[in-house]
Amino acid sequence: MRVHSRRVRAILRKELREYRHNGFIIWTMAIFPLIFLVQPLVVVFALPASAAGELSHEHLLLYMLGIPALVPAAVAAYAVVGERQQGTLEPVLTTPIRREEFLLGKALAALLPSVAVAYAVYAVFLACVALFARPAVVGALLRGPDLVAQLLFTPLLAGWSIWVGIAISARASDFRVAQQLSILASLPTAVVAALVAFDVLHPTLGLALGLAGALLLGNGLGWQLTAAIFDRERLISG
Amino acid sequence: MSPAGDSAAPALSVEQLSKRFGDRVAFDDISFEVGHGEVFGFLGPNGAGKTTMVRTLGTLLSPSAGTAFISGIPLTPDNGVEIRRRIAIMPESPGLYLRLSVAENLQCFAGLYELPDPDDRIDRALRAVSLADRAHHACGTLSKGLRQRVALARSLLGNPEVLFLDEPTAGLDPVATRDVHQLIATLSRGGVTIFLTTHRLEEAERLCDRVAILNTTLRTIGRPAELREQLFTRTLTVSVLAPLPDPGAVFAGLPAVDGWRQDGPTTYVLSVSEQVVAAPAVTRALVAAGAEVLSISQRHHSLEDVYLELIDHDQEAGQG
Image: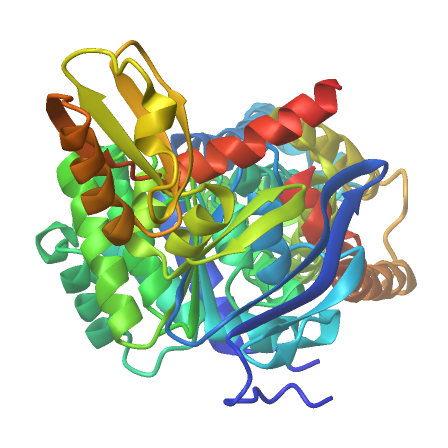
């Protein structure tokens, strides 16, 4: 099957335009990152210099991987059921677009702002830490491998959450239910990130590569599986 | 068969097509053909299967049985994209992105149809529905009639060979309705095949070359005038000042008069085979009988009469 990039771009552009005018999406994209930003900042600023040794066993930066694990799921939950509820799905499906192209456009539209928001929050966190935290704490927090992991795992986690969210959205009949289920289904990845952040799961190169491989595979399969459960007939007449 | 369309084939060809949702029959054993450039009306009561037929021919739903060709392309899951390139469907609900402007809505669909010169096509489509000055208005701020016109402009973007219009004038005011009618006539003259579902029988009578009346199964199909001929005998209605003392003697043996019945104290309805022959003979007979004639008129049966006759018959059969 050949993917027509122009049709994918048409959906992507339309989605991004809609996000700009959709207060609910903007609110969703703002509230989760704020929670994930404020809580660790409060902790870091309250830490005395003597806590640096304790911090060196944790990977607090990775705690913020909860943003790409949860935010895109909440946004992607709107993708199909939202269009269905507002009556716009049928006109789109009467055009030559294939379901795989439609879903890819939707996924990219959720991915791009989610990753941008996540990176922006990391940047704010790093800047705040570098400027206002005690020097010993800064040294213990800002570590190269953690930063690399943060940058690499953000799109992988976001992609996985998006496919979970869209898959649920394609089967749900109500947007609110879809959103709750999507966040619930994305919690395990957020929990894994938290376990690594607090050193319950000790991060090693092997673990990182294993998780990255699993997420890459999940993203590829996610697209195919979501397309397989995207039932045009049920969505139109159900 | 290859998905390439056969230009000599009818625009739509449907053979024994059925659609069921579980035990529920949406439509059953439907066959018809629609020629290129024809305006074809698809009429029926609520739940008759009209919208399901449009969705099936538009590849949104798979038929349960039967075959169909759209622009010469067989209706199969593999040909969905190719068929959708050649058709457009305007659903009953406009289905616009209300937060986006008219132009943004159309830009999205121009991309989905991969149009080579989208801005020009959008401009032409908006001018066709007299909305060029509203291009930058948010769709959510438009009236229902204007939204319907935007949906129509969206349907025109891809220059469809077959245009399915599902209740295109539902809820429109008379001026907007007239504009839509004019546009349908213009499109038909330009060779676009129009498949029109509507509840407005006077609309179907005015616009459609042929109509089909559906009530899960196909009840009848033909030109409106032909359907009237098939279902109703031709009649002359005679109104006189005072009741005729012996109407049987007046109307018996007149050329082209097959029978008569009284319809009120001074009105008589005559079944005739040829009105132009019967009317002068009836007039002469009435004058000869000393009757004072108020009027002699032929009764016109509308498409609505045809429709009601068929659907009422179905309902009576269902109750029986």
